[in-house]
Structures are given as C-alpha cells and as structure tokens.
Amino acid sequence: MSKNRRLHLFCVLFTSAIFFQTSQVSALVTAKAVENQVKEAMVAGVTAEDVVKPVVASAIIEGMSAKDAAAVATKAAVETAFQLGQGIEAVIEGAVMGAASGAIAAGQDVNTAIEGACHGAVTAVAAAKADTRSAAYAAVGGSVNAAARHNQDSALAVSAG
Image (cartoon, rainbow, N blue to C red):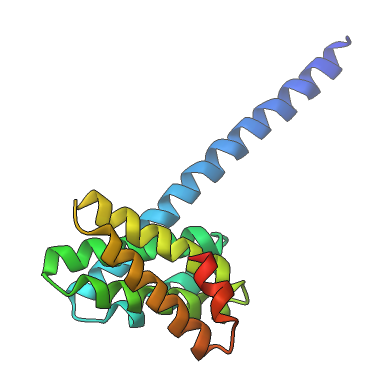
C-alpha cells in the first residue's frame, strides 16, 4: 500500500470517528435540552400538554426521532409532576396528547410519537415506584384522545401505546 493511500485511509477513518463522536454528543445534548425545557416550563406553571407539543415538534425538526423526542419529553413531564405533586394521570394524558400534536406539527407519524410518549410515561412512573397500571391506563386515554383530536385510527393509536 502506498504512503498516500495509507494517509488517505487514515484521514477517512479519523474523520469518521470524529463525526461519530460529535453526533453522539449532539444527540445527548438534544435529549438533555428537551428534558430541561419541559421541566423548566412545568415548574413555571405550563401544563404538560402545552409544553410537550412545541418541545417535541422542535426536537423533531432539529433531527431527533419522533419516538425519542416524545419519550424524553413525556418522561420529563412525569418526573416534574412527581416533584410538584401534580396529578400523574392527568399529566401523562396531557403529555401523550402533546407529543402526538408535536409530531403532527413536525410532519411525523403520530403513532410513533404516541409509542415513545407511553414508554416515557411508564418508565418515569416505574422509576418512582408508583402504580404503572394507572400510568398505562392514562397513556391509553391520552392515545385515544390524541387520535380523536387528529382524526386518526384510535385502535392503531392504542396499539402504539
């Protein structure tokens, strides 16, 4: 192998490694930013639905998947609800509906966002050692309401959740 060819191969590999590391850091920062935006707004008194919708839409537009954006935002909303002593079921339902609306606003699949939101909600509730069954019921309720609001198939939305 010639010296130039080895140098070229090294440069390609080095550039690829840098790109991979940068993209991983960027994704972590984006998830943390989503979490912080939701928590700060809810502490300021904004409802879960009203904060999750624009945060999810913005995160999707910035390159995060609908499922991940919805999961992170909903998890943050539920964690904040526990800290603030808010009704968890209402927050879950609102966050799921907000995530669905945010995905639609960003031109993404509503069912993928619902799936992520339901996962984020149940994960947060399980981490708090609270009633995951009630959380699942609230997530299904939010799924059905979101489907009805956006003229989607509610059976498909429930299966996504």
